[in-house]
Image 1 (cartoon, helix red, strand yellow):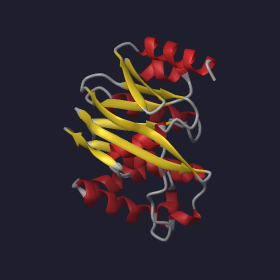
Image 2: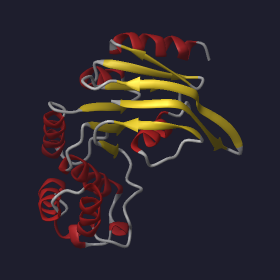
Image 3: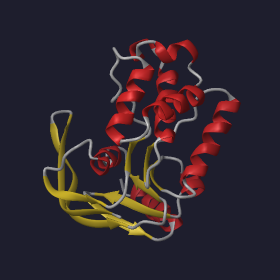
Image 4: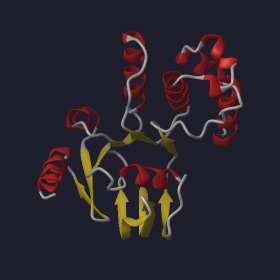
Length: 219
């Protein structure tokens, strides 16, 4: 269970203050994967960071009952001067998992070769994405937060990534941001629409998609 209590968050965009969520009390239940929909700039990625705990609220609090991942599409937490392996060891210590086991898992999964022992600042964006996804799959969470899931690498790597992620969701839920209704239908059963600082939960992802598309028509 993830619960927001009287949660408020403002951000500055192009010098203008924007309300992302406004005095919201809301619960995301366990047991169903959720698609998060909203207009461009509504604050979906910001909300994921709030749920993850990487961004603080201005007011209110977030209650988490379960282990919550960082947003899977986010690579900015890597220290560029450290190697891929050193970054993985740091993550392992933070999340209390076996360090050597995670290092070996990511080495095999990410297929970075010698670059695994090179500074992350030398990586291409695709290599960073492989490292980020490998670390995320190597740590088991109750909730996986996904910000625009991106397929990287060749066909075999994409197939492997999809299979591992699907396997993880057998015992875990996902909260996913995507502009693709088909992607949301593939992974999510229910939906949340973020509109004008408010969150509305829909038990069926199809209902959430319909409401979101109607919102877009009212620009």
